[in-house]
Amino acid sequence: MSRFASAILLLALLWMPLSAQPVPFDICAESTTWVRPSPEVQAKIWNDGRYKDVAGNAYYWTHDFLVSDPESASIPYHMANISGLWTARTNPGECRSVGKPRRSGYEWIEIWVLLHRVVQITHDANTYTITVEQTGKGFQSVYIPRLNPRAVLRFVTPDGKELEKWDESAPPDRIQQTVPPGTPTARQNEPKTALISIQITTPTHISSNSYTGSAGGDLPKPSVLPSSSIFQ
Image (cartoon, rainbow, N blue to C red; front, side, top):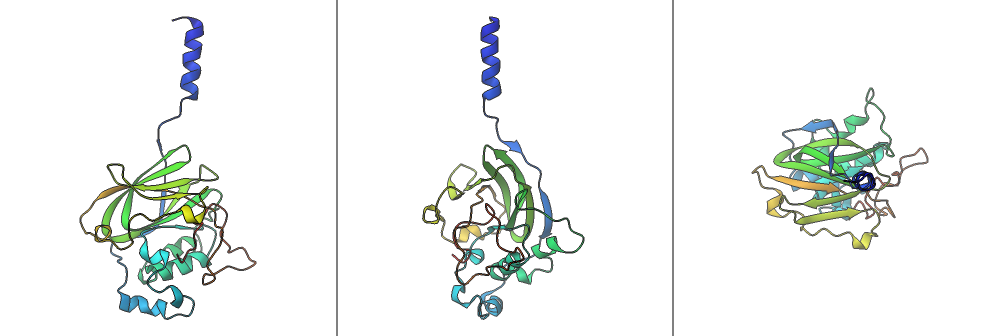
């Protein structure tokens, strides 16, 4: 092979996209026994005037994979109430307790994984793929280093079927949940491995029923919360 051909091959290899690379992650809080409270127990939250208009249909109540703001105290508080995590002895709010390191939303992605556990996280281009194992019980609050200002999150089955996709560049009406919330397969007790690719989206609005934060900085940071309403 000539020197010219070798140089061309080397340049091609340098420009060739890298395959998905493993990403370290930090489990800040977790439980192996928590389950979502019964409707009778969760009624304590739905009877609160702040949540009664979204009782039983809120996004955080009907989904198992949630994205939070690492810097906010109020947003995770409402997420815990709505998702049912307020009943957990250990909850993600403890990640913001005294003595815990402060996390910037521009440097970290925070996800809550309910009724599953994270097995592996990889990154390719602007996409994070999170491999999780279904447990039927428990939750994890996970911090992932942010490697892109904007990121894509896709939920796919082990055989590649896409279940859900979050894309920062997509407006809210393009974001769809293709698997109806509460389907039996999402609550089975048998361990099952699935791939989750997480999309971090820039918020365009927050429902009038949601907490909008104070001047002290509790509003969500760009590229941290889903662009659709948190009470969707």
